[in-house]
Image 1 (cartoon, rainbow, N blue to C red):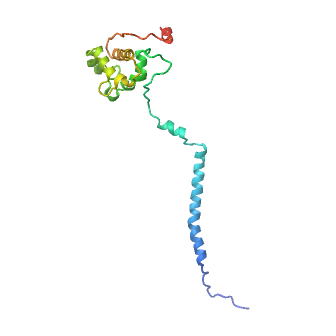
Image 2: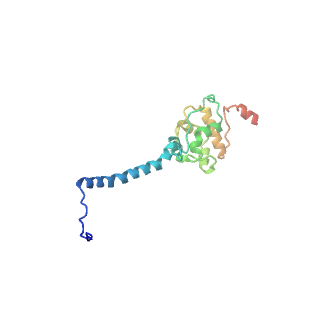
Image 3: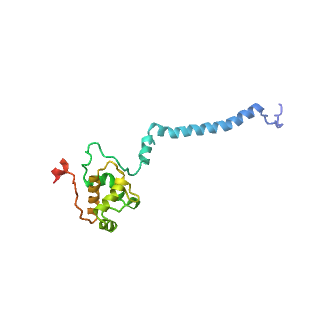
Length: 177
C-alpha cells in the first residue's frame, strides 16, 4: 500500500485576468445593488403612492394670503359698499396692522386721525400716505367707494362720520333688511 502524499501544496495562483475580474465585480456589484434598492424605494413615489407631485408642492408653497387689487367683473364700477371695499382692498393691511396701518377697531390708533377730520382722511386715502398707496393700491376704486371704505373703517374705530353718495344696497342686502 502506498503512503498518502502529505507534502503541502502551493496555493493556487491567481492570474492577472482573474484579479481584474474580482476587483471589477467587487466594485460593480455593490453599486448595482444600491442603485436597484434606491430605484425600488422611490418607484412608489413616482407612481403616486405617497407622491409629492407638482400640485402638492404648489399647494404647500402658495402664499398665505393674496391681495386682490382688481374688482370682480360682475360689480358695476362705483357700486361697492364701504364694507365690500374694506374686505376686498383695505382689509389686507388694516385688518392686521401691516406696514403701520391702523387696525380697524383700534380707537387709540384711529383717534388722532379721526380728530383731523373726514376730509383730511379722505385726501390721504385718495393720494396715499406713508406706506399706503393711493386708493389703497386699487386704482379702479372711485372716490365715493374710497370714502365709503374710510367711513366704514373710521366708524368701526370710534368715529361718527356720515356716508355721502351712499351705495344702494344690492338685492341680497335689501332682502336681509
